[in-house]
Structure formats: C-alpha cells, structure tokens
Image (cartoon, rainbow, N blue to C red; front, top):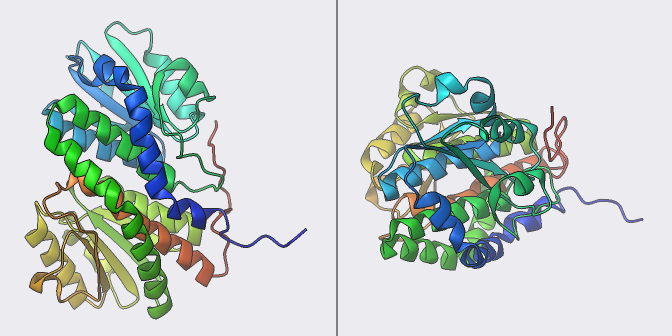
Length: 353
C-alpha cells in the first residue's frame, strides 16, 4: 500500500468548486418547486440554522435573503433554536420557516432543532444538504448540492456550493433577473478564481512568517470571515479569530503585532471604511491581505491584494468567489507546519451528540 499523501483529499475538493457550483445550479432547476413552497411563501420570519461552518454560511444566506427579498430573516446556531427558541425567535411571528443547513444532513443539533419545531402551529421546515440519503433529507424537504459531497473532514466545496445554491434560489424568488445574472458571472469565473487563489495562497504561505491570523468582514461577508478563521484553525491549529471589520478597532486590535496576518473581505458597499481599518492594522505591524473586487490606489498600502473580479456584481453575489483563497491558506499553512489537513485532530466529518 502506498503511503497516504497529506492533503490528498482536501486539495482536489477545493479545486473542484467550479464543478460543484454548476451542479448546484443544474440541480436547483430540477427542484424549482422548492422555491415556490418556501422562499416565495409569506412567512413572518425565516430562520436559517446550522452548526459550525453550516452556521457561518447560514449567516450569508440570511443576509442575502434580507437584501434581495426585503423580508425578515435571521441566522442561528442550531443549538440556539433547539434549546433557547423563545429567546432566539420573535414571539409575534405567526408563520415561521426554519431552513436547516448541513453538509452531511446528519448533524445532531440540526436534526433536533428541526424536530422540535415541526409540530408547532405556524412553523414549517425545509433544508439544504449534500446527501440525499441523510436524515435531514428524509425529515425536511431539502435542496441538494450533488457535487458538494466531500471525503475530507473540513468543509470547502460544500460550503461554497450550498451557499451559491441557496443564493440562486433566493435570486429566483426575488424575480429580479439581475441577481441571477450576477450569480452566473460568479459561476463562470470560478475556475479562474480558484486557480489563481491556489497560486496566491501558496506564495503567501511560503513568503511570510506568520503566527496569528485575523479575518475581517461585514454584511454578507461576516459569516465568510468566521468560516475563513475556522478553516485555518481546523487544518493548521493556529491562533486565529474573526471580527466585524469596524468592530475590530474597538479593543481587539490590541492583539495586532508583527507576525499577524490580517485578511480583510472588502465589500464595495463599505470599501472606504474597511480599507481604512486594514491600513490602520498595517501601521501596527500586521501583514495585510485584501480580498477585493478590484485593486486601485486605495489598496496600494497592502502587502497582498487578491482581486476576485466581478465589476458590477453585488457584494452578496460574490460571496462564493472569496472562499477558495482562504481555504487554500488553511491547506498550505497545514502543510508548512507538517500537518495533514485531511484529518484534523479531535474532529469528525459529522458531529453527533
């Protein structure tokens, strides 16, 4: 038997995101009745729930829902809905939709949360997963990301493809063709963005001596910053945190010093403010990496700038395009530290209680 190569599962899974996004869109066309049943229906509150990475993508899904549909939506950890429902969801909501998000469809907390509310008057449940044989798929009408399935422990293409699929569903529900057109542009560019992200992440990890990682994001990108922080923590066991970009200035910035990498998910909506924060961190000795739609004179201060592209594409629609670089950062940092990103310590692909 040949020796196992560290990262041999994770690496191709990060690299196949373009295929996963295309498959998610194709599958959504086969499940378009799901959009009518849930996203076009008149619910007072829509609650996206997940655990770990699935909770972070639920945040981006909820932010997209609020922006594109103009209706109330929140994201909660599955355990909050299961154990603290009365303090987590508004009591005046007579019709509530809960959307369970789970790669495996087997996460105990997601299943418990959905089962706890299914019999409540006015409550409905549905979901999104990568596994059609899962319990989630069995107990809740769920969208399926068929190419999101992964063998590795950490979520990579599953995160991007499920986020993208839900955004495509929200775009369809909005009736605004511009949102769908934006998402199609992101999908078309995904292979190129992923290939460039691979090269950029390897060079960054090889070039800099880093011991602390900070990820910053706002709006639809706050969940992405949390997921990016988790990715490198899972694969590399390094010290890392995620913050709202401007919130980072209120105390947490005291941790910045040489050897700190500050990664900023830069939106176009708040670009000037976010870049000002990043430049301030540069002044404290941080190595600064910007993930931006475009570079310019205002990004010249950064040590590294990764241009996602997509001029004219809204911030929310670009969400999936930001993920390959931060996933590759986790992967290459793990290899640099002599670790196997496929099998992080203490972790399993499915978390059960």
